[in-house]
Length: 379
Image (tube, rainbow, N blue to C red; front, side, top):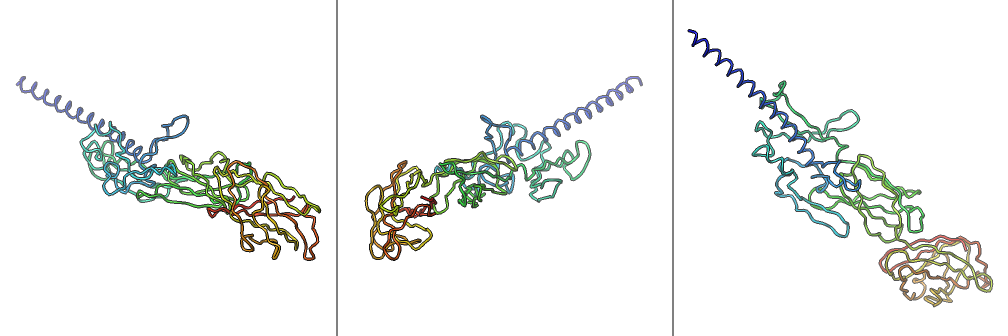
């Protein structure tokens, strides 16, 4: 009898120990599942703490694809997704460069897309309003009981991805190489379109040279600026890594710059404007136009002291493109050079010389590339 009682006691102790051991193992699985879910989230939106010299360099799947995955399997296999391509002109990568899960993640289970209880993780892309933000997606594990609901280790585990964690706005100021605000310039932001290509978002700078872009996925992106009527400057890389980000001032956007102006001639009826080619390359000038007040006309146009256009009948007046009146001789405007452009011998309708000092001008210089640049001055 004593032996039977002893065996019963041992059996109870063993059963209790086994149950306790199972609880410990299930608790460990529960906690490991939470770790796995955090790693999955990092694979999707990156790790904002990974930085080099203060610059974030980890944006996960979103950084290269420009969107959230439609299914978690897109993190592991490329399938029909376009392979990553680097655009050297835009300094921008676009396309799948996975797998995006860290190597240590796959050591937890045989299938990295299942939790520690061998349930497939659920991926819900239903947008949900939330206090001060929007939930873009939810990663869900159903816990030890493999069913909706429960408490303790049976409880559902939900990890949200908020919109502010992967989409943001950027704003900044842009200046030309003379330090002047680049007004009414076209700003273009380039970023992955989610299918291996590149999307373009266009904005116009305001009177203070300010631009803003909204709802752009985080990651290295590319931005370029085109002065009003001018040529697009070489794109440069920017990084969107906060829900609202103010970029440092962007300077030295190439342009045709005013270096000075004056009048000369027998009655101050020659107008000289000194222009600098700060576009970063040689360009070809193919035409010219001047807009000014008054009914005066000029018959000769010099560049660097040499005649490139002339016409005594008809003469050129305000808002006339020279090439529409007579032949314009093209001019190679060398990069970084400053050249004098001269409108010569202004006269009125009675052929009387007119003093042009103090007359406001806006001139347009036309290039063979199709670009044109406006310069305003008062000699």
